[in-house]
Length: 511
Image (tube, rainbow, N blue to C red):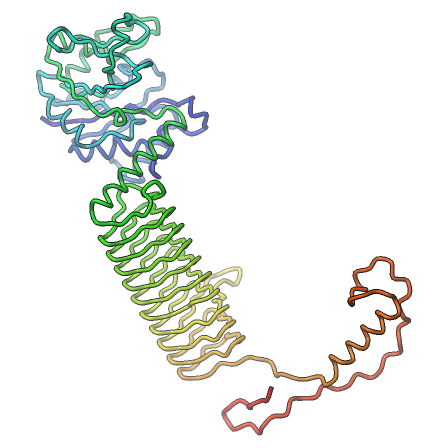
């Protein structure tokens, strides 16, 4: 039979003590509402209706951001009058649905596909299934009451339970599957004859026990746990992360410390890859085989090839890294970067919207933004692309085989030709021809005797004031400074002796 899913997610969640709707709080990096929606889709539900209330627009946006526009239908429960009333809010969408309805909750992210498949498989046009669990401490939950043959009879709430019923350890998880028309017809007829004036789903199950068959499906205790406060969210987060780590390890990934791996659903990692402690893999991450991702790396929405070494404390987002690259430590790969085969990016290197060609290297303290770096280019320490003039961003092109000297500033838009060289300290503000040397270094001059005269002057000041160590400038009370002397004519700087310059080449200087 066709299965439609109704997800109850209208509550504010006051125990969260938050301005954010409860189902928007995250477990393993995903809003809780995503988990039941993902399960419904995995089970092949033909329609998914989310019953929303508080911050309905934001909840819908969160779901559609992940699964696409139109992935769910929304019913609004403006007044919370019980779980049964919430299901009735979905009747306008599903009133003509001639199949099964699966009822889930937006705050139960730990349900597994296996147990839900058993629940759906047991339901039919004449059978309702319900999920139960056995808890060592069932306080606060409704108890499942059975007859002497073990057949389901009813659900009794704890406040209404006898002493014998309170000692029962089988609890109602509140998750059901059965004929949609039976649920909607029964909910419309049972009324609100209780102290709270609410419509309860549990009343439907008591009638189903009399009119249809009821089959129970037992789940593990942690699977049915609801997240009602931040402590519950943290517990659920840990359980999901450990499940994901276990899946990776069973697929051939080495996880050095599963308790300290932060990984989100949907992450893919190849066999023989090693993940160090405190690694975070967020969003759509795909890592190839034979890689090493060391401690503290944070990778978001990236594709990483095979045999890549990501060293400690790198941050990478929305980028691609090809085979054999070495990244880090403390490297920042910002969105739009394409790192090709065998590239080396070292400590404190930052890229943004930059392509690094095969075998290129930038090993130290470098910023490459809006750049196209060719194959086997060497970028020296301290190099920056000056890509923003306060109004527009422009690109820098460094062609294959160029050598960029340390402390080079590349003022975009600019191109450094194939095989060209920039000298250390150069500011490149015009295109550099292929094979040329770009040099903007100022001429080196010497002032003969300056250091000796400076020493004599400071020693004289020390003797006059009784101040030691040349620190007179830092002393508040130093009244006996010598009077200023008449200025002497400055001695002209003595240029360093050089050999005659060869035409077309810079002069060779001593020293």
